[in-house]
Structure formats: C-alpha cells, structure tokens
Image 1: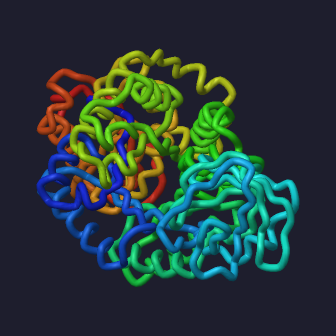
Image 2 (image 1 turned 135 degrees about the vertical axis):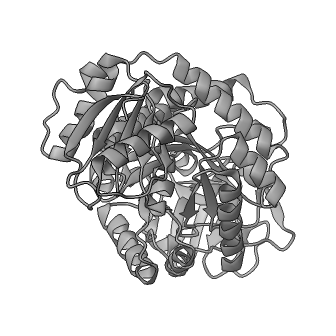
Length: 477
C-alpha cells in the first residue's frame, strides 16, 4: 500500500456526477462524506447508491459517512439578504423577529436568550463578527458590535467559551439517522456532542434504525464544543472515533488553542483504540485554485505526522472547482509525510497491559513484523477488531484485513494503514492460508519468497476472537 493515511471527501454539486466521482475514487478517496446540513433525504439516498456503484466499478472499498447537521444556532434572514455591521453600533438578536433589518435579526435557535447574560461574547460567521451582550430582555438579546462586517442570512452563532444548551440531536437528526440507515451508512458523525450521553443516544438510534437491515453503524463524535474538551475521554469511550472539527471548535476556544488540542485529541484517540479524523479548511484555497498553498500542505502533513487516521475535505470537493485535483494533491502530501516518519514501535509497547488474547495476538503480529521486516500482515477477521488494534501503532508494514464480510471491508476503509480484501470462508486451515498467500500475490503486494504474518481465530471458519498467528514464506503453500 502506497499511502497509510485515509482521505474522507465530502461530495456535493461539484462531485455528484459519475465521471467526477469515479476520478476522485481512483485518485484516492477512501470514505465519502454526505453532509446532511444540505439537501433532502432523497439527495443523500441517490448519492449513496452512486457511491456504491462507482466504488464497485473501480474495485475499491469505499465507506460512507453520514454527517448530521446538529442544532441550527444561526441568525435568521434579512429583508435584503444582508447588512453591514459597524464597530460600536447597537444590534439586537430577537427570537421573535421574522425578517431582519439593520437594527435586528431573528434566530433559528429560539432558546438562545435563556443561555446568555451581560458581558457574554458572541461570535458570528465563524468568528468574523464579534458582538458583546449588553442585556437580555425577553426574546431580545441587546448587543454592541465589537468587530463589524457583512452579516448575511443564516450565519452561525457561537458563544465564546461554549455553554449553549442546544441538544446535540435534533428532530431532524433523528429522521436523518433513519435515512442514513436505509442505505446502511457505515459511519454516522454526530455534530456538537457535549458528553457521552449524546453519543450513547445517537448509537441507540442508529442501532434501532439499522436493525431491519442487520446493520450497526460506527459513531464518530465531532469535537466542536468547548465543553466537550474536559469530557473528551468519556466521549471517546462512548464513540468509535472522533473528528477534530476545527471550525466551530476554533470559534469557541480560540484559533491559537486548536493545534495543541488537535495533537492531544489524536494521541488520546490512538491510545483508546479509537479512530481520528482531522477536518476543516485543510485545502481551502483549492475551492478556487488548482494547487494548495504551502501552509495547507504543511497542515495536512502535520496531521499525518500527528497520527490521524484520515484527513478530510469539505467545500473543496463538495462545491469547489477542482475536486479531483484536491484529492490528488492531498494523497501526494500524505504519501510524502509518511515517508519521513521515524517508526519506533517498541516504545509503544513498553507500558502496555494486554487484557485480551486477540489484542495480544494483534500486538505480537506487529512486533514480529517490525523486527523480521516482513512484507505484509494479513489479519483474518470477521469484525475488523484485530486490524483496528494493529492500526493504532505506526509501522511501515501494510496491514490487510481479510474478511468475507462486506460491511467490515467498508468499515476498515477509515483505518490508518489498513486495506481490506475479500476471501471466502473455509474450515480447512491449509486452504485458507494458501488462499491468503495467493490473494496477496494476485494483488501484487508480495512476491514468492517474501515473509508475511497471518493472524486468525481457531477453530478456523467460525466467528470468534483471534487467537493464532503464523509466519509464512510466500510459496510454502
């Protein structure tokens, strides 16, 4: 495998035709993100069908992530579409206002006045406009403009330092989970979770909606609220992974705090055997330009060196002019960053305590592969857990999840340094080991005479935990 870090690409008007999507997947997309903040249910269903068709035609395992909108904490609409706010001016956010003007504007989130007090700082339009609360009277929030600028319809509102009481899951989100399960989305990303309870509720809704299809999605917590940071471990424990959602998070905690938080979150996710996605403005200039800025190249590379499982695009591929070029550039950056990594696998194991047999086998396979300089690790797996544990440690040996389960093959598309292949089940170990060897030979990842490490669960062909490992020289079977 030439690239360990995965790419999550948001698709939209610029990338929803078959030709463009085909080129994007061929360029390296591993997970397609459907943004439920835009469009209607049928739009997402149609795009999911297209993604599955194109991925199959390309011979690729591509996962689908349904990204929920979450609470709409936004201003309403203006009579003329926008206004210009001037520093020092008085401005009212009014939950009872229908159509805004130069003096006031309505609110999508009607409960906002209950959350605010005098001296609170409000950041609008991703922090470009700053308002300071003077007082709250009934449905009206009276403010003074500290930093002005153009304010247009439906721009977002954040309270500096967090603390807004809006629930993570809205009625729309609950319906959108049902839509996502109708096409068996592999991942569900939950916007603005404050604690573990938000993620547990989302998981329960996903499992119930997915039950008629025999499907259980994996849950990704988008860390974008200030109050989520102190509770990060409990959120991780209740999730399958996190997204470092740097947009709203930066508005709430300040831009300068985000790089350090990004490193901390990715490190915590890996230590907890969870996934990590780094998102927001990674290749922002490529919405309009055919090449990224040097700063964007460094941003993507640093996320890779931090150990993120995936880097993500948003508007760059959803509505930008160069969706394919964005994926090509991002893939090249990941590849070059990985080449510079210094692998120190032994240090990862110094203070680890193994509590499960399958986890011990996974780490034993990594240790063996690292020191024997094998060409590949093949994990025969039903659930993908063995491949996940292996992928939490940096190693310059590719990991292959070998499974007959199509849901598992799609799921591991997000795991760093893991690629999935299909192999039919058998109760004959000799047949299975020869099948693994022949599969890797056909795929061109090994040659005769190469060493590989294979892990599996015995009795072979039955669902159960991994409990066996073997070192093979290709050509023995």
